[in-house]
Image (cartoon, rainbow over all chains, first blue to last red; front, side, top):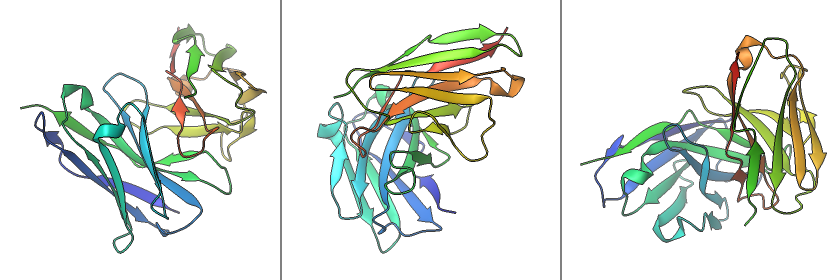
Length: 121
Length: 108
């Protein structure tokens, strides 16, 4: 059973860069069967897709965040990462890493447990 | 970009009631539509995929229908454990999903 686990600082100062890592276990991040992505949820609000990456390195970003987002893959560690620059209080949210199936149930996203990141000085 | 709307934004119903949530896409997405349930403090959980297919292990009181731009999610007999927020999600462009704003379901 493929599992995802987010890790990273829970507190980031305004104007700094938010950095999170997602460790994949139970499967290979180099598989062509999945897209890997980040989705966030501000407290009390809905779900916002941040961006996705394919094993080939192709990336896809939410246009509203594109100028501040970088997603990358480290196949040697079976991890993928999120960097969000110039953060403000509006970036405070639970950040989920997730995978989208391309074969069995295309378009279905399966989620990690999520990690709360607070932007505050 | 494809936008998703949901209605209502919240509802309160009695145990045993039939509950219906609608989701509308800003353009034709065929049946590329999933439904998730999210309970407080938890990650979303898949209930329905491809608009009308029940995920393995999900109770049969949950169902979905629709295609094109208009979709419906139904709980045939609301149970106390169904208290949650429900989201639709389109995947017309698979790596770039869009979620509806959510419908919060409560017990009257």
